[in-house]
Image (cartoon, rainbow, N blue to C red; front, side, top):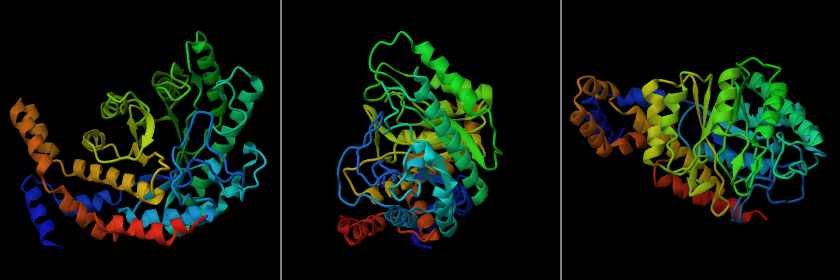
Length: 418
């Protein structure tokens, strides 16, 4: 224990915050680290390299992309060694199954393609979230998948999602840790579409069929993820915020807030306490959109801290599942994945170090000056010293040192790949 942490512990103690207990608690709060940063959202269905398409894209061609599942696992193990905390999950998409490049069609995937993932997860003491990939496929037609008016296209994707849920349930049961199966589709239109209602009714009926079978929640958590717009889908997205929240509340499903899927001036943090009383589960996909849904690497921002404060203030860790989601192929992918995960945990730590009871007392006394002044003073409190202690207790490198490790791994491993 260094002198900086001893001093920080004393300063927070003056506000009634026990930093030792905060470190102990945050280390047991699960963080789901998405994996598709490592392979540019390509997956392992085929040996033929192809860029993602059909509502998704990854920009850049930095060397070191994981081109096999063995490289994928190697990179993930490095990421895990750079992120503090005892409880972590890895979020994968079903395109990243152990197919060895020989999957004939997406609907041919089965539980057997994920048994090696389960073995790897047990060895590394992590959970696994599994989500479908409604893109990069010939059945993404005219901008639609499951909300398509083409019955054959629609039925293909309905069957696909049913298989995803079955496999996710299998994973959750095998690991004794519920797997989150998150439903996101790119469906929408580039320009004025008078038949928006028709597509949304098609989507509703498809979801009714998909969720007709319910699995034990201890194995599987189902969530729906909205999107405002995307490249090629500027006019509207079928799966909007209003549509999915309405469906989730009515059907007792979870909802996913991707922080990059909203207008840049829209605060996702304010949506958490607004929806907590009504939703079964809330999943966070922490991303960073610049001007549009660009999936930039998550960094520590006021809004990210505000998101975490809403969870901590509501003591909603039993309902809110924290995860990351971004991909940037212009930089070291392993470093980028660890960077965002560390930023998410830093924001959570800052929120947990807040003397919420004192702030509430000021608020109840209508002492708005003291409330605002304390919030301002907290900005210069030595949270970084507590963070360094958290990293030390987790046996991961602290700030500065972890960057050197990521660069060393790049030189020793990533840059030697073809």
